[in-house]
Image (cartoon, rainbow, N blue to C red; front, side):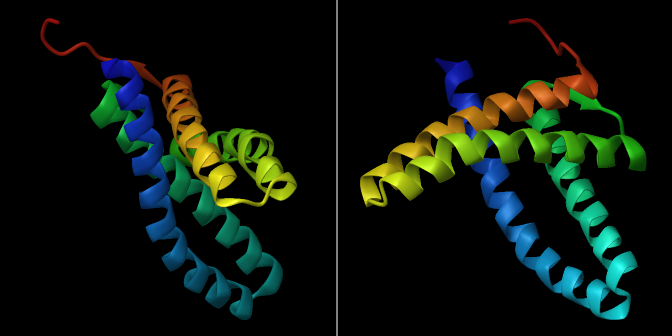
Amino acid sequence: MERVARYFLHGILFAVLYILLFLIWIFVFAILISVGFIIGFLLGLGLLFFMTGYINKHLGLYLWNIESETGFWGTLFHGLALFLVLLVVNLIVSTLPNLIFPRIETALITFIISAFLNGIIGKEVASWFGEVHVTGTG
């Protein structure tokens, strides 16, 4: 039961931290695009992927003792992989049901399911880019 709770916590914490940083990212992205359209767009996407990998890397460390690569490129590709997997899964699990059945009940059910699945995916992707370190017994 503890593992299920940690998956859910991983998904919820990722969503909250991602939303907070995403709001900041929107302004930075707008500035980057206004400075140089194509270069700004690419830099903005790179920043989004780096931010995604950074959040998940630290959640993986604190919740699952998974030490991921600390370098720029490792974090960037961590975020890219997580972003793509979450995009596909959340389109299927959350977006489609909410478009087909646009009710508050659907939103609540898909939120709970998505939080749990996002935690599982977050842990799995973190393990792709790191290794588990056992601390203590138990």
